[in-house]
Image: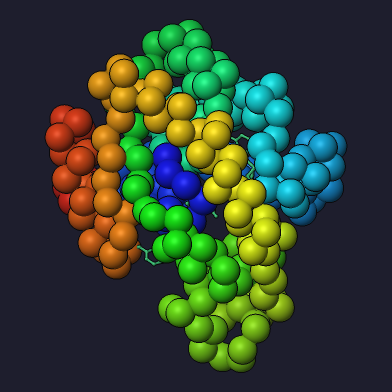
Length: 221
Ligand code: AP5
């Protein structure tokens, strides 16, 4: 968990690979549905574009569908979900039914001025999903083209300054209470998300070690 731009996608992808787990990012699933024009994508568009949350019933439905696809047996890292208290309660019920309790909830703490800087200049590849942050990893071959597949890079529709501000408000109002929900149950572990990606990754690995799970070092391919 963490505010927009905290590094959830970056770190959750790495953790999932290291632990051979599925990476379930509700934002990615919704953007994929939008890009392919499914009914779910059409319903989600206005929420994604405005930086507000897609209705709980839609998000809970799509997470449950993925869980039924066998993701729960494999182990999973949830990214960007749950984002409201009803979603957290829905997840609790789903995991009870599956007999798969949460190992822990990692919360990336990053000040708002840092996330605004990170998200403001981000470009993404609409074809392969590669991300090009403003200051790092500029496309090597041709500016504004993806290094990997040459598609023209785009700016995410919710990375406009006014929408970033709205997303931060939504995080404060609707998602911070979810962190409190897990803090009360002793499941939340807050990690400093400022610093190089590898530094943050080391802090997360240390927090995971404290949860009593196998650290990623031994599990890496
Ligand atoms: P979602 O896709 O989840 O967006 P978000 O939470 O706003 O998160 P971001 O993807 O912008 O940031 P992140 O924390 O993943 O950071 P990242 O690793 O990308 O959701 C989008 C929308 O979908 C929502 O607004 C909502 O409409 C809908 N939605 C999704 N889930 C929902 C749910 N459960 N319920 C209802 N609606 C839902 O990093 C950001 C940038 O920083 C990148 O450029 C990255 O390269 C860079 N970066 C990462 N780490 C570092 C570092 N340590 N130092 C410097 N730069 C870094």
